[in-house]
Image (tube, rainbow, N blue to C red; front, top):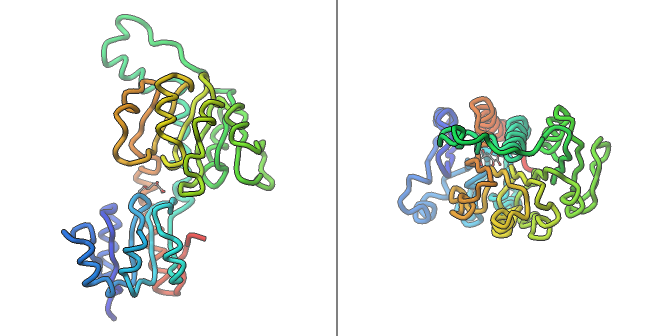
Length: 313
Ligand code: 8YV
């Protein structure tokens, strides 16, 4: 039996690339000098496409893959996958939720701690030799504080659980209250921002949440409170955030995601009251292996049963 032909849009974890190559006839689109011409020539030969959350797959690519039957994406976010285009042709989209919840929540908490206490800033301080001149400035206590979560979903709930270990009170804002949730619901994001000492963004990216954290929300957060984002850069108005950091109208920001990754604005990099991680929330050996296995399981189950194991609803 001939192996299904799979289009791999960009580079993936070596383990995932190797296993895909053992199981399928894989072609890496990123190797093509002229991807459009390649797709026009050979697009019809692919029955599957593998991508990741950062790359996604756009409508033109889906259209060029005229015999595409399945998409398998490495990541929980699908804001860069043209879902309407896939749905219009009945193409299921596999993704990798849940397996990364713990590591992403750990990273959210690291950012809460780091932006509040200034841990990475203190490391720079020591290495610069500044400790020899004066003690590191006092910071903000974490334990017992108020943690607001925008987006109490799979990851938001794990972040809330982490907060209980720090005796923090948790409230959240979603479009609707989550039935049976032990956490307090704030009907408006502005109300949540006003209440919170730390506002953590855990909402999905995409058009529905674009710039939800606006200038007004940042003003409601105020100069003693902090924002943390492990979701998508698009959820925050980055220009308004930079202004708030520069003018110190918020206490600080802990960020793992940005509007135009991996490019981070120089003005943001210059903000000492920001902690900046290079989109690493799920980047552990254990979690990335689990994500890769889910990508493989989604494809395998599709080719065996016609159904993707874990598909975007
Ligand atoms: C991805 C992520 O691993 O899962 C997501 O949505 O943002 C990360 O965990 C990263 O984008 C690689 O594509």
